[in-house]
Length: 86
Image (tube, rainbow, N blue to C red):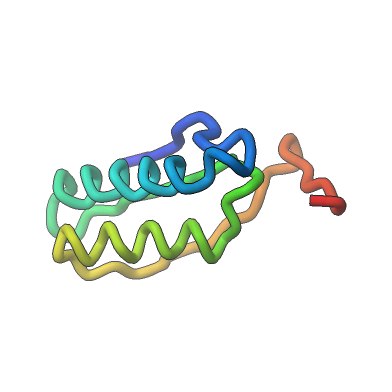
């Protein structure tokens, strides 16, 4: 399952609700995937740090009662440069 929603957190005020949405999407994917399947989850929200995103996935995995492993940790593609002032 590939989870690649549009940016759910476009400003800092939307952070809490956006994190809940990422967690909810991950939970649905974890419940739907077959045993041994892979879920690729992405966020292009500039205000969601790697740690916050991982926390969402961790919480969703706990709720779904699945064993999670990180197979690959990717960063932004060249078409999504990171502004050093953020």
